[in-house]
Length: 490
Image (cartoon, rainbow, N blue to C red; front, side):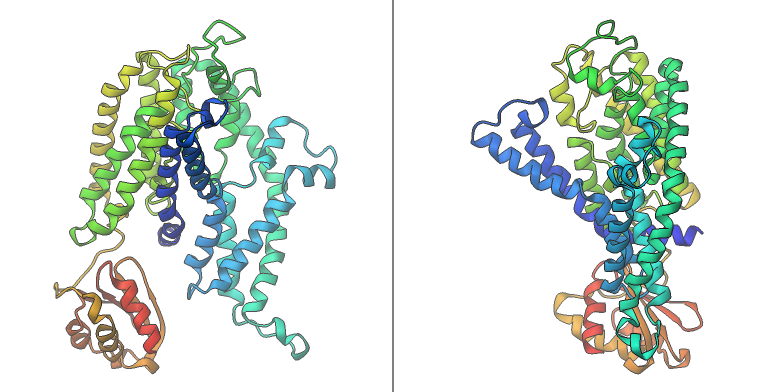
């Protein structure tokens, strides 16, 4: 189970890698064009450039679930064939179309009995559904890519059959979700109504479950209780409408269900990312640093935390639970200190600046001490948990073995590939070929033909045999180019 989750985590790295730059573009865009967030006309060159950057970034961020579907489909396929991406896309289109609110209401009049059940279908295009579609496409590809049909149907055999099988499976999944999603959303909605009455502790519980439910796409049910006006609360709506506690039906301490996210997203995430960097193996730190730094900037500027969260939530889910718990604890603390800020996009620097001038904002200067505390606590807790329990965060995916050897330069990829092929017993002995972050993964027909000395002489840092016919050759972050060259030569 844990290995499958770690494999899923690796499959998510491709779509996750594109998210930080998109969210950074949005952060810069909002800074140049505050009208896009606050309302009003977009006038002037600076504002127009900002609006352009916002739309460029949001084109990616808003379609993140679709990116997850395609990325997971390819990442989990046995040979990373593009047919798996097509199958995942087919699954996504089927499920999100069949379970859209308008189609559900047309097919089953009266099936949606409450607004919160309707939200379950309004929010069907979420990260969980994207990942589910990717898994469906990949599993169907792995199972049916070699499917043979009778001669009169031979055109649809093999990889062409994968999308057809995926469509059938996705229809069955849609039927299950049709009944399961409304019940889950209704249950979470009822739970949210209970914790509304619990003051700062309730706000902390909300923040905890908000983060915890993100991998499953169910956080929308709670968000509609606390942020929007589905039960007469609407913390976000009233905050940006310029209301204050005690007017227009605001009976709670306005902003208490948003404020706790600011120190966590602006400072806690960078602290946790720094802990991951120092916990990574030295030879993998450069590769890990690029993702961790960009995701930290995205989180600090505009509160986009998905690049950071999806980098470890499946590979080290216990740590993600701790991460969610820290949000809950800090939200309680923030509520008690009186710091109040709001967001319309997410809890980053951009929203903090824009919301600081609103009537409900209070003690926004406290973001400095609260943020520094969050940075320190997240760093210490993450570092201790990662090292104590050997969690597979970026840069710690697997143990590497073997003595260090020379680095492989750009000019020697072809030569290195030729030596690796020879060391594996020749092209005919290589049954399958793949790579991960730092190593080539090969499956051979005859293990006796593998020459470990020749593989090490090629420049490999280590050679590992996890199974009888399985060989892993460790090269470092340049492994993709060596593997690509091997495929060309083979």
